Image (cartoon, rainbow, N blue to C red; front, side, top):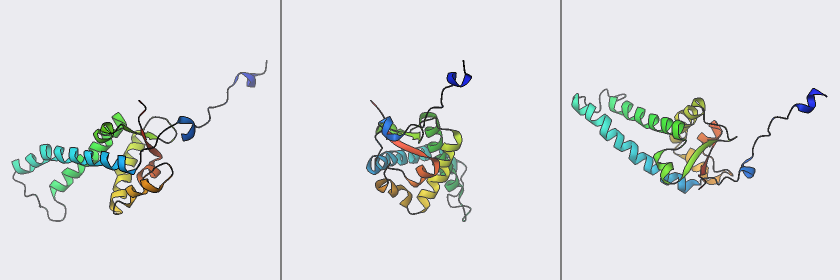
Length: 158
């Protein structure tokens, strides 16, 4: 018997159409992001503000890059990176039943999450939020940070 007959072909990539996914649009993602911003602001109020006030550090010192700005930035990015890596969704996405997943269906890796939530989110925010507005106009409802990281945001199946 020929050995090639026993070998199976590698599985073909799964397309979005065959997975029957429902992409999360701009407004659903906007509301989820708004919830996340409230959560991050609350975390900063609980964790960072007492530290700054407790050590009597002036909130605007040093003038070129205040310590409070650095710490709140760390909380912001840590929240999005850790929640996305461990749960594939933030609290805002959980509330609206949205989930981040790789374009090809495999698991989210640390590299993908850090690139999407760290670098991609930074780029999307610094271009006057145009990176987020792109979601409203692309076929698969991808933001610039999704395009960079090859991810999609979908509605969870019930």
